[in-house]
Figure 1 (cartoon, one colour):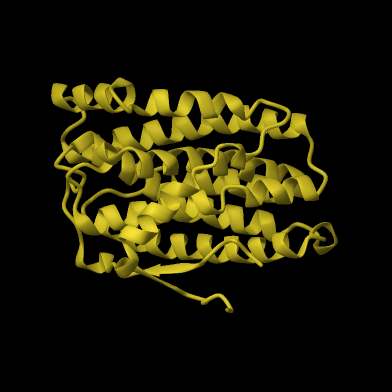
Figure 2 (spheres, rainbow, N blue to C red; figure 1 turned 90 degrees about the vertical axis):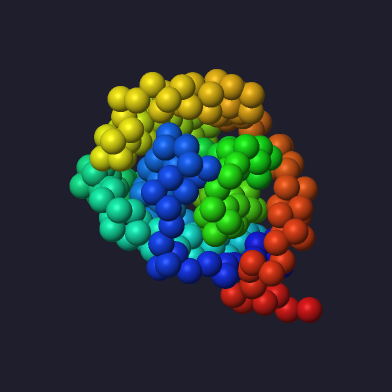
Length: 274
């Protein structure tokens, strides 16, 4: 039986949200907004990559079910972040990296199944590390509007829950070490570069790019207590281990805690059989 649950959250982003919804902090808000902008295309890339795995490679019944539910979770994330990004466009914050990202994805779509999966594994590792931080460090969303806290925390729960699926599919399809880590190096540079560019564009359109307080906030978020740099460093380097697996870092308690404390905010789309 699959260990995943596809969930619908009780949040309507059509109502809109504040310009600086993340605690009134321009940098924190625009960094999270930049990530959201990349998610619909990225999540479709993940879905297409795992769908491309030949059925004969997925001999484990549990993995087959988890691939199915991985697709369901990512499709739901994609839908919510499309709504999110439409509100950003209404606020005058378009996704400026969209054309370049679509071009890159078209190249990826022509690659081998294993390379597409290796790229997916790398990006999934980054989303899993960020998801862990969202659930582990409340200050990342301190003072955020409640609906936005729900969106990001729910997304983090499901990214954590399915963080091993693409990796397991990659191994089941015969993927090896060097392909995995070489694509990880490439993805690491591209993900950082694209996120930085989009965050800067958002801040410029917001009129906050050249304000000292913006970059004071950036330094705190990246290098302060519970900062992104420190949070990402160790698990980021662990990916280079030949014996690496995403669930070597077992943080299921973060999933369980959020689900228990926010049971009214979500419902299963496809209830599990008793």
